[in-house]
Amino acid sequence: MTPLVSILIPAYNAERWISETIQSALGQTWPRKEIIVVDDGSLDRTLEIARQFASADVLAVAQPNQGAAAARNKAYGLCQGEYTQWLDADDLLWPDKISKQMEARDRCIGPRTLFSSAWAYFYYRWDRANFSSTSLWGDLSPLEWLTRKMGQNLHMPNSTWLVSRELTHAAGPWDPGLSLDDDGEYFCRVILASDAIRFVSESKVLYRISGSSSLSNFDYSRQKLESQLLSMQSHIAYIRSLEDSERVRAACLNYLQRRFMRFYPEQVALVEHLQQVAAILGGQLEIPRLPWKYSWMQKAFGWTVTKRARHHYNRWKSLFARSWDKALFHLRRPRLATGLEGVA
Image (cartoon, rainbow, N blue to C red; front, side, top):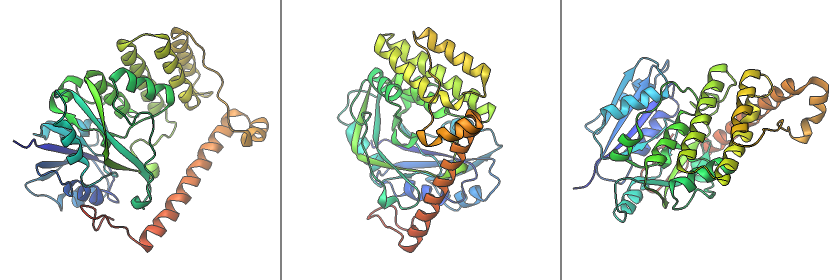
């Protein structure tokens, strides 16, 4: 029998994107699929729009606002599929994304093989997205995948993965106690429970840069910083459970250093805690360095003010790029041969 694939979409205030995302799910060439949208207490028309797609294959339900992890757990509790396709409410699947990964499944040994895919960033013009490979784009063992991710500051979006039900059960549920990087922590557990990771280059997803409304938006709140810290500690514990070598500890230290700026210097207690974690790994975190163009500001106004100014500058730059791309998109809306007609 052809396995059923469940496409699970958590959504919060996603009225701008949810129609496009559901259309990309419906456009999948894989014949047996169900689509479940869980609205996490949105304050806009997300649920209303999602319910316009209601059918035998599409279910849209609502819950009080509890966070993305709780919405994903709710969606999984409702699904029946033998495989799970996670899909954020602003991302898009290439029409044959699932089909290509399921073809690779037929050549694999067991249900604990985890499948990943190619992916690219985009704002609005998905046809201009650049699929740029990284060292994660390959067939890897769980240990090698995590070492490269942490040591080289890499990642894969949620939508790249295709996960069997057996592997999902082995990994356990999403952690609703995490408000940031809950996806990073979750997929670490999935990878840890897998036998191998199979990269399917013909399978593709589009990862939207949606700005401040994104679930993964980082705003320096204390809650998100504490969530980030918990996720980082989990990453380190997971990879060291596989191997506690010098190479692994070096990857962990690089992983901590890359994220140290988010905490330094305002969060004194968290900074001290991170230094303690680094010491256990046999190293020490260095004071983060700002780009040279901010050196004059740092001397005049101090580290904290300069860090905030840089953060806001990058946000405004992204906003401008997104607005410009939106204008160009509406001048000539792109079409894909199958599945994404009429997107946006």
